[in-house]
Image 1 (spheres, rainbow, N blue to C red):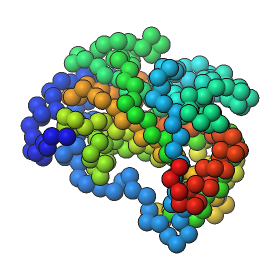
Image 2 (cartoon, one colour; image 1 turned 120 degrees about the horizontal axis):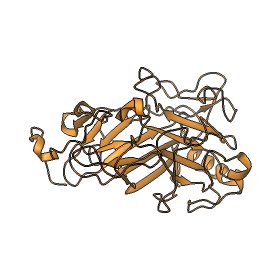
Image 3 (cartoon, rainbow, N blue to C red; image 1 turned 90 degrees about the horizontal axis):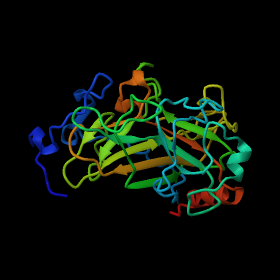
Image 4 (cartoon, rainbow, N blue to C red; image 1 turned 30 degrees about the horizontal axis):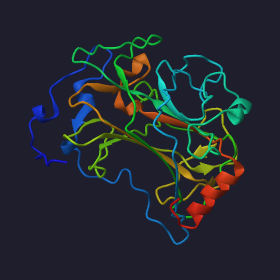
Length: 311
């Protein structure tokens, strides 16, 4: 990647602007060189009983172009509940009408066919300088060409203070808040950066230099009370504390981190799909996961993590 000085002029990143009344706005973007180095994507320092291994599931980059605007976890049975498009890898059935039974019976894009889990997130689009472009037929406030990730990393990680135990079958987990702007940023968990600058994490859309990809990092909660869901879809599985320890009444399960990398045109010409009132804010980034691994595969994930192996 060619070096770019920190005081590079804005034209180094392109001067296009996709702003319209529905956003995003100029203040939603930041040059990665203006982001101070930070440790926002770091895990707590491992303790004596830490589980330090990892397990990666390769489920492709949505080559089969599975998209829909449903949200099976938050609004089962309701078509277009999200009012924005999600991209999917893993389970081929995931939609508003899916059931536990249909997920278990479905195929998967994952290389390991025992991983029928559902992984999905709001798509990223590229728009032209007028904020227009290809419209979503169902939700016209989302415009532009959908970008398929150049890479998708699905990594299950350990806990800084203990071994992990198996996730309950059909566990439903979400991270981030799709309505962050209208909910006072509650439960936001947006982490944006550029490849080669992973020590600079921001909650804004990053403007990356030539040769660097836009990167989204989604860390999921990993302290489970043993239930597969809860009324608000959050209370049954929560984040560890700042030391990595899980609260009383919960156990550490493998922590999922999804890292999405994109080849994005230079300039302020890209944005997440979002609810209309969220104005395409980068802080609304969110991800969803449903565990549909076989028992044997989940046990393999746990074994790899607890033994310190990278699988």
